[in-house]
Length: 416
Image 1: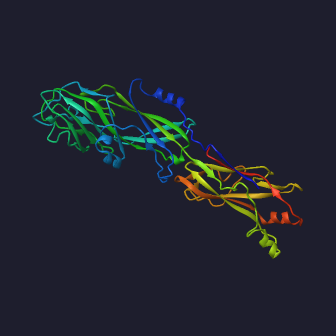
Image 2 (image 1 turned 135 degrees about the vertical axis):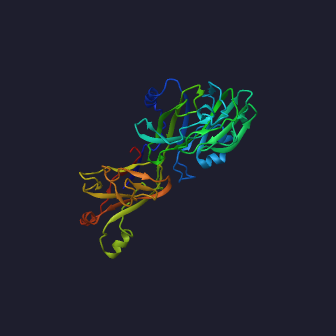
Image 3 (image 1 turned 90 degrees about the vertical axis):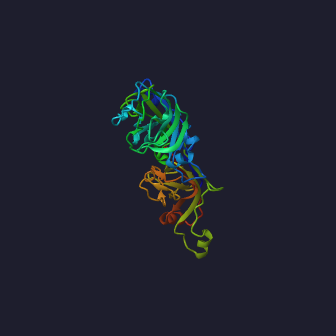
């Protein structure tokens, strides 16, 4: 009995979301600074337990160049840009008689809480990404006669709470590069003036961000896109106080998540031809003068799977039921063949249960969704073929040799 295995949509599809991208653009400001963020999931046989997206966005600034180990530990990524700059529209004035207004000094209040956005594939699948701003820094110049030591007693090198320092500071008397970490949900971070400062310019902006991406194993193959817009300016998402005015009032993050999956079935040589025999083979039963109680074959195949899939049968011979049949070419009589599947550890059904001898049907009922919990890399699976006792009795009662055959196609379909 030849057995055929079919795999549907097992190759990677990377597509462009033209229509959805247009819809997103209509909802965003006409003029805005933009940052493209790109993450990819592809199964890795060297690290099958890694079921997370990899951020492929090019980094710049403090994380790649100065504190890479710490950023990796924190799971944050930094971007240095001149797409948005800031200039003061008034001097920062020291108040010798009491505390200065923090909103008229060096101040940073950022969207450090998690925010959610939706990413959409070309097929309309929707997933949620979360993002937060996790650090702030950049380059600043101060107008003479002030210097960057005009703030104290702990200056730019020592982040004011709730921000946290990174021990990163480069500069001269009039300019400085620095970077601070911003904990989740932190409020404003302020430096205290010690003297008047005629003017301040932030000639470049640097920020760190942190991501929470969806589980790629539950996502279909393709490209998912979405955007989130942050307002910039006094009392906005990126709030640098009342007198630091940005060159652009919006910062947009455009997300692209590429999902690449594998669904591959390896059949050992000769595995396509399945011969159903009694336990121990025909000779053992003939020697004992008994009729076998069943005919069967357990066929092992190797599975590579990172994505959800479904299974069903296609049959050369079938009647009104959901099983395949094999036929005696002489008499035309047929008998049903029960087919079931056992899947390896790491693949469950939609209820999270292991899959052990799960019946396969022509209509696919009961096998509509199998879900990997990790990348399954060349793990054995078993297809069970069996003719039950009553049908074996029918095949043997005529007392003559017969040969039954038929094609049974097992379909592994990733289009779920």
